[in-house]
Length: 385
Ligand SMILES: [Ca+2]
Ligand SMILES: [Ca+2]
Ligand SMILES: [Ca+2]
Image (cartoon, rainbow, N blue to C red; front, side, top):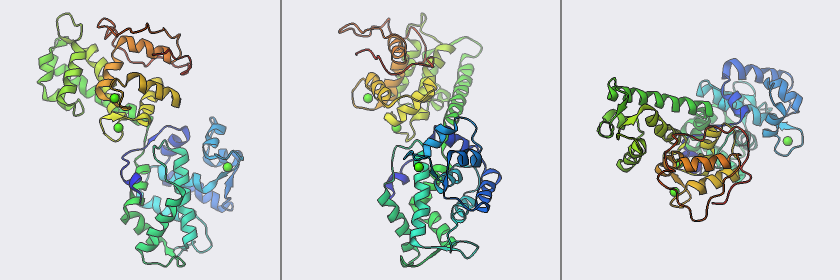
């Protein structure tokens, strides 16, 4: 049970509502909202109006409401929203677990000696799972039938009959001691937003700039050998394998008149490399379609469609194995011809590829660019490969 949770290292938050929750603080923001909601009678459902009022949503509230209203009946489950709010907010882990338990106002669960039945525990876990699955960009799903097994594991751990009741202390012990709920809570407690990924990329860019400056020692360029032999450069290249280092440095020196590397060229090659490494959430060295979606989201500054992600992966997956490795990515992105094609895919008029045309050396690397520019457009009208 729960292998998918235990082995999933990171979750990236992309929805506005998720980022709003993540920027909130448990004791400062979340607990007062829950206290007010309980005081007003713990309404089980929110309408759009309640949702806006309760969570102080001012922008695009309808769109954010629809994230939860998956059956589109105009009502959302209050517990689902409160659970994901608790899990994503910043604050102490222990306090979060306590707050999850006390937010549910079951007849027997109130007060310090409160307990919950098996069915109530199911409702509690279900709300946590459903809430995060609606809001977070996850590449795994926890099926409904697994929730029963989670619940069973809690009762079994404490040797409590399924007709019996679990105390708040026992609930807390289960979350801390059982690998699955512990991994689940940590996954969302440590979730990152897209802005966190930008910040990490920026941090790495700065470290790499310092390495360049030291190696250049007052000059404008560095040599290939100086880079290859520099332990500092190795360190800021996110464990590049020797063949990957060759590709990186090869791309940096390509068509350089004197074989040296300018600062611009150095960063032009390393920036996509850095973005790739941050988006490789499981550190497998390759990007699957879900990870590529995050990468394209960062590059395009808007959510790519599923079809576009598939199309894009097919486009740069030169060995055709379905995943993009680091060399495939850096090569594709520093290749001017491909950059033009990508521009076309992202909404500009698509130049037709001449039949049988191979990418020539002069096509490559003339522009040290990323595909960072288009703000508009869609994946429609993609030229045939
Ligand atoms: Ca609904
Ligand atoms: Ca990966
Ligand atoms: Ca591949």
